[in-house]
Length: 109
Image (tube, rainbow, N blue to C red; front, side, top):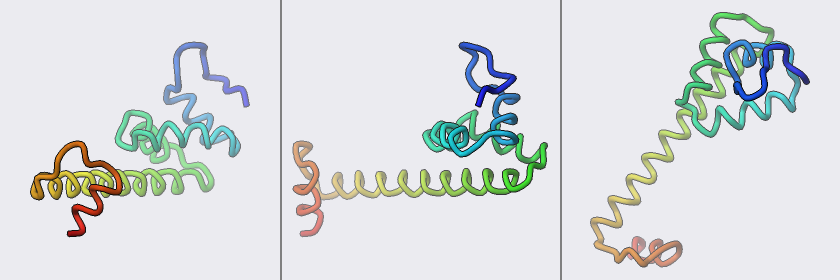
């Protein structure tokens, strides 16, 4: 779908995001979701939530903010998981060369 607000080299501004959410199809939404899910706290995710709050679109206005909130919760959980793993490695004084299965075996002891 060619979006009327898209200019070469400008990226996805608020008008383009609004157009994609309002008139786009699954392929357009998948591309937008990829960008949002990559950085759920980033400016694009923030713009999507803001646009959905300002422009009520059938289905879209409540689905996208809910998906972004879930992506943010997942990102927080991944961050905590990485932190706990790092703390466990530090606590057990595992050598840095241990990776993958060897770290799991060491932590299981």
